[in-house]
Length: 283
Image (tube, rainbow, N blue to C red; front, side):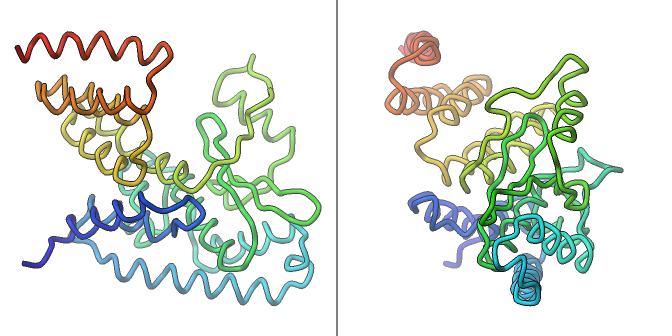
């Protein structure tokens, strides 16, 4: 019996969850997440577009000797021209909360998306060009770092691939956290591939929670766990959502798994109290 598109995608996520981070194909995994949320959508067309984007990035890199030699700012400029110029991708400033903005298939169709979804396109294109790039876990606004031989270029992918200097980052943190906020150590944290994908899906989970769709948020967390089965926080969140849905056995299983992964600390202590209460309810 053939698998449904959702089951196919979930099997692919589970397979990716067993890979070392460096071996994860970022855009391909993002497409699998997208297939689950939009099983009727044409994911193959989105995959073909990603291939076109990669080929364009390779050609653009070969045509710019300074960028290919390691000039990070030129690399940023080349990728911005390909992704935002030639392919027309941009941030969705009109309907930011739309769930389609975090679904890579829909982003490919609409050429609009959230910062992290656009960032996956950048990372996909940079990798094709042979250039190192990383997601940046800036508070409240995903950024990108394009590496070069003499440092890195920070990029706001939501703003058409604009380069960011220290004054821009200072203005951004004030816009997000308020006028008293200032730049501080740890604000520009590089992310691995799993972290980028989890941030993408976290946008969907949080929007479902705000819409009171607890079962949908739990399903999103369960799919995230297929990719990141060793994330104690995700197991805790899934356990607490199961508890709220009165799925006591499932809640216990998730919370106990979180304790196996993270047995010490304040979160573990709070989790043990919940586990004890749930066990009493089962008796």
